[in-house]
Amino acid sequence: MAVVDVLNVAGEKVSQAELPDDIFNVTVKNSILHEVVKMQLANKRSGTACVKNRSDVKGSTRKLFRQKGTGNARPGSIRSPLRRGGGVIFGPHPKSWAYTIPKKVRRLALKMALSTKLQNESLMVLDGFDLSEIKTKKVNEILMTLNAGKALIIIQGENTNLELSARNIPKVKVLKTEGLNVYDILKYDKLIILESSIKGIEGRLSA
Image (tube, rainbow, N blue to C red):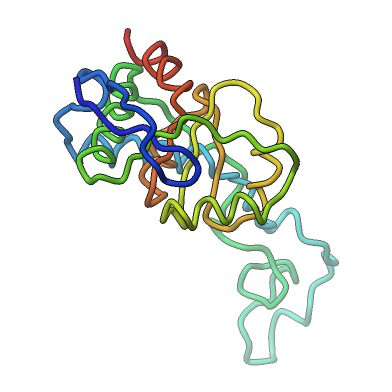
């Protein structure tokens, strides 16, 4: 097992914690990480883009001008895609971009993402992050002390003061262990794990 220092909010070492090798020391394959991130982003797409076809556009069915004698092409409907304000040909319509990949692959990718942070020394463990009140400034000061300007904070259970204090800080996100995902782990420079959430991560990925 990998042994890491446990810090307090002042950045001081208070103890050590063990991280299981089968979760935090896995061989990283970029192709698997790429596939899972691509799936997550595809599932987030709204797919609401929509155009009006020829039949959806309002317009008279009156013939625009006479058939012969003008030298122009034979006039069709004012709703023709060839005319300004007419319908759109082959435009997008609402659809779902979502797809899934096997659960075992998603679980493996999550382990790889955690391993990447540990290998790059971008993972830190805190003994706690308790706030007596909702104070964004206090969270910002703590993160600056820890040199974690762009950070993902993993908590176990409810921590309302921390969640509300951090939600207005750009480049900072608080996630519960249940919501841990590959995209967010890789997106943020630092991964801050509260010591109490390590067991939650183990329980989720031990299978």
